[in-house]
Image 1 (tube, one colour):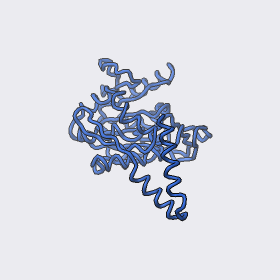
Image 2 (cartoon, one colour; image 1 turned 90 degrees about the horizontal axis):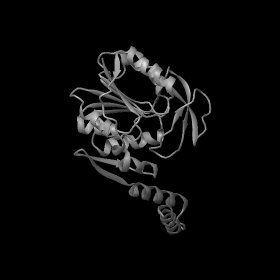
Image 3 (cartoon, helix red, strand yellow; image 1 turned 90 degrees about the vertical axis):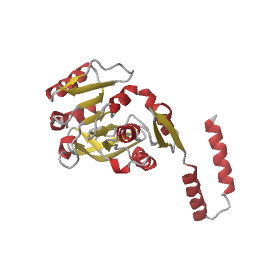
Image 4 (spheres, helix red, strand yellow; image 1 turned 45 degrees about the horizontal axis):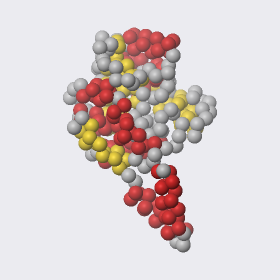
Length: 265
């Protein structure tokens, strides 16, 4: 029904502007789009958060995003003053915002999808935390190299985006991008004390390119998604984290997500 209503409203606007000149019509439509851009306001554990929701997929995040990962919120609530969070796969920034507002920590947010990145930056402005967050529209991988980034959709907030090793990954859009090994960025960014990794499949490659970062004793904990990796890949990821001095916290309550928490041994 919402699709029908949207089509009817779009048709009405089209009729109302049909007799305008070309550039005046485009200007009016652009101004109307800006004025209609919806925002969602939610309260998460006592923290008020505003999210820009310019398209259908983005609505998921204020509606379900926070509730889907209570364990992530609890992990962030345990941060200390002076912590620095790397949010890798930040999407539109819900956990970046929560960490910066609720925990008051510095965040470096990595999001290679340009459609989601635009919304991420807008959300920083809406929540008044642009001074505490460094947003980076770049991809991370196993090494610094030219890669292909395949986007599942061109709506902001979409998941399932993958680096495909220089091959066309299909999806809604695929384009070349420069992906960085996280260790190659060392010294150019504040060192992380907390790291969240959720990139829908490229976690093993990113961990492989971050050995020095993971082994740095300043890094206290890593929250990593292990969804759909397979037993052998899971073992390899677990082994790499252990080699870097991080062990899985098996006392952490299961929140229904595929995230696993590793802490400094």
